[in-house]
Length: 287
Ligand SMILES: [Fe+2]
Image (cartoon, rainbow, N blue to C red; front, side, top):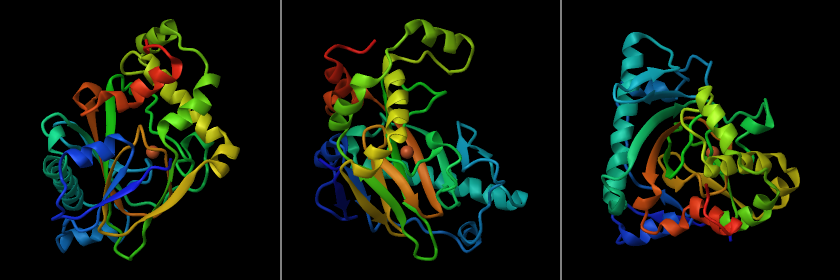
């Protein structure tokens, strides 16, 4: 089954359990009519990239919301920082309103401004996000958390954000997990001791990193696996568990993105997490 796109209107009748159920089942929620207006001063942020160009994105993180990777005058950078803080509040309000079961349980992490065209230079296949994948962070073990992401297309010239979505996680895992290398608790402890990872890499993290790479490396799978093209128009917001939903970003520039974490135990149904799906695929609990 290919991940469904579920349209939600602002005044729609169905915020609540059914949206959580769709999301946990691998849907992408599409909101077409949520407002996130820019001030006249802020219009400049979608006219040219206010980025130093060293990193892919500009972002704020942590309690201080320190801005990283930005360009512009001090006044402009402070305005961009405030825009990102406002977007984080927008994402929090969206969760409270449409996914009330998660309110107070979701931890809001980095917020990013993505002014550049999707990178097609193909520097390395591992970093090529046009290839279908699920998100996994090499240096930042996730353990028993889920990755929830809230995106918004802020392109001023009508350009859509182009995505591909793929098949459901369990079907994908059934094809790839049997060939993945085994997990070594010893090397996980070593990576943590050497500070290569910020915490001990669990078996789940190990499997997700290898899945990420195995998927991106397999050109036959990339071309022939079940998949669908999706266009997100300017002004649209979309929400998904990016650790569960197979996706590739094919094109578009000027986007805002909020990353949030939810504990598996705080899901409506933890059995639908990639953690539990992988355990079922292996036929035993993960270590
Ligand atoms: Fe991704």
